[in-house]
Image 1 (tube, rainbow, N blue to C red):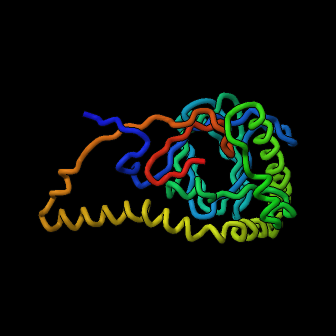
Image 2 (image 1 turned 45 degrees about the vertical axis):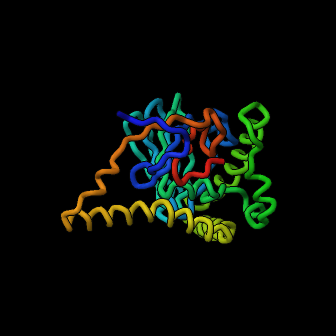
Image 3 (image 1 turned 135 degrees about the vertical axis):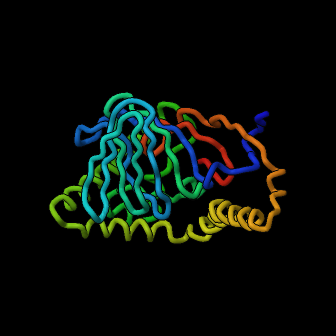
Length: 249
């Protein structure tokens, strides 16, 4: 029998990953492209599993600019430090898998705001935060946030395409400086989440090698449903799950 509990589940998802569902924004930006807010993660790899519609993800990294098509069944992922921008092509819907569940929700993401905003932590925080709720007022703030991120992103992309990587590298350095004080919190989330999950596997392998599989007596199944629907994420409208290790905001 599959057990159905509340949000405080006893076990994390495989690998202690985070999970959400996104419908890409259809708001048109300054470059006539509809989509989300460009940003990067500092220590987490992110994956898109496309479940519907069409679109793309634009990425910036030291190896240049890429425009990766997205269609049902395709998977795209990007490592820490890669700027990514989800582009809406028509009904684009993705399931998002995030490394190190809990860290992205605790601030492991930095928007590509212009340099003068990145240089001022208070100004950055004011531009990045959203009010609570899911109504029109929140949508307007989320759209302004997206537009500011696209403004900085387009400058980074222009320079990178022209062969000048320094603005992009400067953005990475500024992003790292912004989040530096959060590292102790992230380290604890990682220690009790992803690291603990990996160490548990090691203990299970040790038990099997010793011929002592008694830990299998704790076998169970779990079920979870979204705990917030149609929230405003960085890339689009977001259905979220409160799972072990996550700090949904």
